[in-house]
Every structure is written in structure tokens, then in C-alpha cells.
Length: 516
Image (cartoon, rainbow, N blue to C red; front, side, top):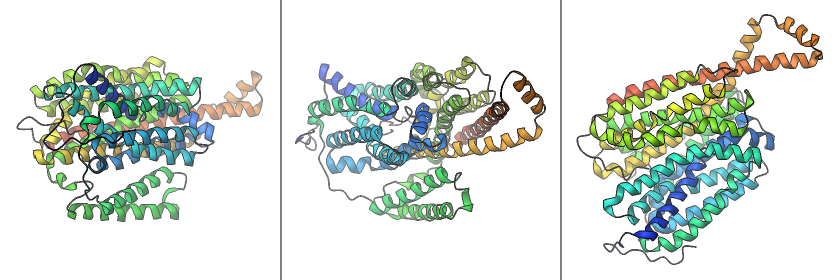
């Protein structure tokens, strides 16, 4: 445990670490960031396994993904209060312990309902870990090596989502899905023990600061109601259901009340006043749209590969992981280029590139070989670092330095929330479009009876022949629906790329250390 950590007195900041202690502390903080980011993608390819094991549909299985992302988004704005209330080091350790406990409970969950509840708890604990780890990295490194500190965070942020689909697939195929959560335990427990020993001198004073309770409640109410509406709408026949209408009304009223309260409160949980800066607002919307598009691909594509093409979770993971190769290689290049030319050019390129990749995915079909599926994932990484780094510079450069921390927190909240909501919307669109495409195919299909006769001539019973024909129609309908989803994603990316030009060019260097 953390023990009675002694807070660093104001104005008496301990010297940065060096040598082996610095390396060990950096590894601990990097690993903590790693496990949190890993859990954003590790379940993506495991959804069919989880759904089958718990006796639910694959669409319902995606709640495992969206519940974690929504809870994480809601808790990111609480990081500052959490650190002030308990101290930065204690907050980090407590959050990591909570994350470990919730990971174990996720693996032990016997039903989808309990799994979703514990995934929410896991997201609540995991949300503050990324910004806290970045804050502590900046404290333990000398100021002259702040770039190195941020590179540790950046590398784990990039690598973890790449390894997530691979690990998730291998674990689901070779062991069982609960182990995608159990593997967090040894890493997290080692990090807790090491952090309590190495980071103790860097504890910060505690303050009994007020938390915006009303704002937090309103945030949970409207986000929760809206997310439930998206997740349950399709199976409840949308607004034909009184329950869905009730959720929509609660979400609308809660959202309006949240906006009014946060704009008038002296200490808001989410500082919406930074949205008055046109450049920040445009940048935040563009970043949210780009992240939403990326998340749609990493959720829908593996589901389609496994349910339609018959891929195992492992091979679906290999296919999706390819998108991180160029992202890792080009991240340093993107950082340098962004400093030398107008970042709007690099950001516009990066987001438009995502749109182009979505167009490439629209050419997928049920007979596509592995390389055809992996190639768009591979080259997607070319544009990713350019829009990520450039948008951070542009959006934060549009606000005064005193508002940088608030702006960075709001950006993190919006991009995470957009990813979760886009996932729910995309799965709904996919299922609805699959049904529509299947109905149209049945209406225009030629030679169905001839195929049935041919299958029976091959020795197949009539019922089996009909099931085979029905499966062929289902496969084609699902594939057409996937193309529709990626078409919408492409339009969204091109719109976001155009939005970038509403952002004014920064007039000076931007402090991006507050971004997370």
C-alpha cells in the first residue's frame, strides 16, 4: 500500500530521480498507462467469445467496450479533484488498486449485466490513471528531459492498443475470455508495490477542494441515458418503446441542465467556457470525429471478420494490429514536421487519410484474402500520428495558457465519449443495414431454386440446402452493411478534415504537457 506518504512541501519539490531509480519509476508509470490503454482494445476481438459464453448477441457484447469507454470519459475530468483530495501518488495507487480489483471481478462475471457493471467500475478507476501517470512522469524526470518523459507515455499509448487485439485474440482462442482481464493483475500489483516505494517523495499536499457534485450527477445522468438509448434502441424498436423515449427525454433534459450548470458554476467539473475559442472548438470536434472513426473500425471490422469470414479471434487480432506499425515509426517524424510547417496541413492530411482508408475498406467482400483486409489497417498508421499530434498543438494553441489544463481535460473527455457513442451507433447501423440488405437481396436474387436443386443433387438434405442458401444471403447482406458503415465513416472524416481550417494557426509554442 502507499503507506503514510509525506507530501512534498510547497516550494520544496524533491529533486528528479536518476539512474536505476528513474528507469524503474518510468517503467512502473509506463506499465500503468499501458494496462489502461490495453483494456480499450483487448476486448474488441473477444466480443464473439464473450457473447457466446454469456448467451447474448454480438451486438449486446459490444456493451463490454462502450461501458468501459463511457465510464473512463466521465472520470477523466475528476482527475484533478482526485489528486488534490488524496495526493497525486496516493490517487495513482488507489486508482491502480481499484483497477486491479475490478479486472478480477470482470473475469469472474457470470452474466453480461455483472460484466458491464464491473467494466464501468474498471473504467472509473482507469480514467484517472493515464493523466496521473503523465503528471508523475513529468515530476520524476529532470525538466530538461520532459520530452523523454512524454515519449514514455506516448509509446505505451501507441503500443498498448496495437497489442490489445493480438493478446485478446490469442487469449480467447487458447485459454478463455476471462483471462483478458486477469492478465492485468500481476502487472498492476507489481506497479502498486513499486510505486509506493519509488514515488513516495513526490507526493503532493492534499486540499479539501469542493467537487462539482451537481455537475457530476448531471453528467452521469445524461451520458448514461444517452448511451443506454444507443445500446438498447435497436432491440427495443427505438421510439416505439416507452423506455427508449423516456431515456431520450432524460438525456435531452439532463444535457441542457448540464450545459447551463457548467457555464454558470464557479468550479465546474467540465470547463465548457473554453469552447468560446473557435479554434479549440473546431479542433475538439475534429479530434472527436477522427477518434470515433478509428474506434468504429477497430470494433466493427473484427466482429465482421469473425461472424462472416470465419476468422478466429487471434487472426482478427493480427489483422487489426497492423495499424500500429507506421504509427510508431512516424510519430517522431510527425512531431518534427508539425513544428516546422503549418500544422493544419498535417492534420488535414491525417484525417483525410483516415477517410481514404475507410473508402479502401468499402471494397472488402466475403472472399477477401488476409492481405486485402490487413493492408488498410497497415497504411492507416501513416496518417494517425499527424492528426493526433497536430490537433493537440492546434487546439491547445487556440486557448490562453491559463486554460490549457481545462482544455486538455475537455478534449480527453470528448474524444473518449465520442468513441463510445460511435461504437454503439455503428453496431446499430450495421445490424439494421444487414437486415435491410438481406431483404433486398432476397427480392432480387436469381437462381435460388437452381442452387437448391444443385445442392440437393450433391447429397445435401433440403433443410441443409436451405440453411446454406440462407447463410450465403446473410454473408452478403452483412458485408454490404459493413461497407455502409465505412462509407459513413469516410464522410465523417472528410468533414472533420475540412473543419480543421476553422482553427487559427498558433502564434507561438504550445505547452502540451497538460494534454492526456
